[in-house]
Each structure stands twice: as C-alpha cells, then as structure tokens.
Image 1 (spheres, rainbow, N blue to C red):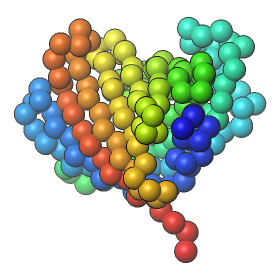
Image 2 (image 1 turned 120 degrees about the vertical axis):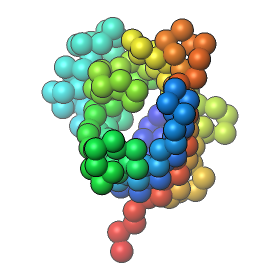
Image 3 (image 1 turned 180 degrees about the vertical axis):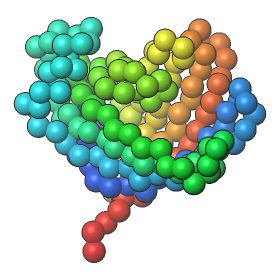
Image 4 (image 1 turned 135 degrees about the vertical axis):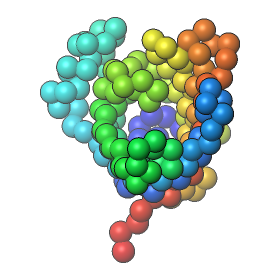
Length: 178
C-alpha cells in the first residue's frame, strides 16, 4: 500500500461508529458520524498556503491531497446530546518514499490547530499516523477490512508520552449509491 492507493481507497462517503474511552475522565463516548473524503486538485491555493506555513520546503513533492469533512453526534455532549459537531480539514500527503512520509493537516485530530504528522504503512497495508501536538501525542491506525469497510483506532497520550489520555475504535462503512 502507498499513499496514493490509500487515498483512492478512502474516497467517498462513510458512516462511522466510534467508541471512545477517556481515561482522564473515566467515561465512555459513543459517536456516530458521516465522513466525506474527496480529492483536491494539487493546484488548489490552500495547499500552497498549508505548505508555506509548514516546516517543509514549499516546493516539496505532494501526492493525492484531499479534504475530509464530518458531522458527528455524540452521547457525551454536556449541554445537548443531540447537538451535531462538524468540521473539515485539508490533508496534504508529502511522501518520502513508497511507504513513509509526512502529512500536513489544516486542522489536527487531537487539537484544533494545523498539524504535521509522520505516516507509514505496515506490510499488511495498515496506515499509521503519529502526531506530536503541543499538549499531546496521537497515534492513529486505519486498515481496510474490505473495499467498503474500514477500521480506525487511536491512542492519545500526554505530551511526554508517559500517560494514556484517551483511546478509541471506529468501524466505518462506505455509503454506496444505489
């Protein structure tokens, strides 16, 4: 698996069911989401802006940039459990070789700020993403069970890496047009 294959296989609309365990608050959270993943043209001006604001050379070779948007309902919303949170981010892969590279995100997974991550693929095609944020370290894993089903897990650690703050697991099913 390489980044181009991974993005191509990820494109589309997904229904996600995620279970999270916050060790810090000793609570479970169930989240239902609609996730949309679509490619972005490499000439999109936002890509260059993201590259310019990163630590990478602005002429770095990118591959398969995409936009991910989501709308999620959580049973852990303190004010209104039916409240829908939504968002979107631009994601720009910058491969180092066939199986590793950097990933630029306009909004991070664990903290709502631009993020730079390291990615790699295991021999079985599992995508691993590691991100060092200001307050935490996130490790995400995504793997495909079939063409239309994928799984995602994450572990969020303290910034020193010594304590686990949160874990989650999601199963995601692609929405097929009839």
